Amino acid sequence: MGKVGAIQDLLRGIDKIMGKGSITHAGMPSSAATSQNALTERGMLFLEDKDWAKADEYFERALDQNPHDGQAYLGKVLSMLRLENVAEIDNLVINIQSFKDFTRAMQYATPDKKAMLQEIYDRAHKKWLIKCICYIVKRAAKKKEKEEYLQELEREKARQEAERQRQEEERQRREEAEKLQRDNETTRIHILKYFESTDDQLSARELRTALSRQKLEARNIQSNCEVLIQQGKLEQHKDNTRTVYCLVGRANRMAEQQARLDAEARIAQEQQRKREQQIQQLQAE
Image 1: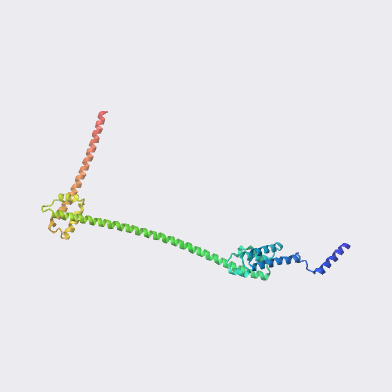
Image 2 (image 1 turned 30 degrees about the vertical axis):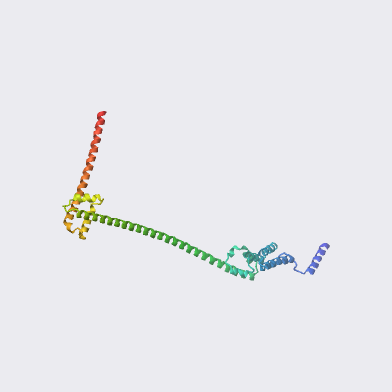
């Protein structure tokens, strides 16, 4: 008991020399708390000097001594964002939820400071949401604009293709009309030459033969004769030409009929030849 009493007297003497409260209520010696606060303060000085790496290093050392140091957590956020003080966060558009150290800073902050940090957190989160919404709206608008652009390209391509086809058809019609005009002019020239070169009664066969030498189609003779008569170029041969192109049509029909008869005759001859060959083969067997 004497030893116990001596130890208690020694502790009371130490309390008188050091002062009561040398042991904190959280169990941390006051010297350790002072060291931890010094590390945090040193980190804040490095933030003012914009030495972000050193600031982060000292905040980490402070947290190694006291994991509940809210100021050190906040300092790590500032060093990561390269800011000198927490008020500058309002100038940024960041996803504050991704900074876990900021959440811990609010968790371990004093009530007054926690309210201030909560306001900064809410403002930053609101700005981030607005940015996300604007991004989504712009992306949707850009997608719609791209779709409209592609649709316009398709429409323009279709218009160009339609225009190309129209021009091609117009070119073909123009070429056919020019060719027909040239053919008609050639036909009329030869008709005039033929009528002017003879005073005798013209026959349909002679006219047809003469024009066929120039590779002219007999079906154009009637229409071109009518044109020449209307132009007054065949006025003296009016009656004769009308008789002629009627006879030409008749001669053409007769020629077609004769061609069919000739073809039928050739077919009959071929069939007769095959039958005779079959008879000869049977007789040979």
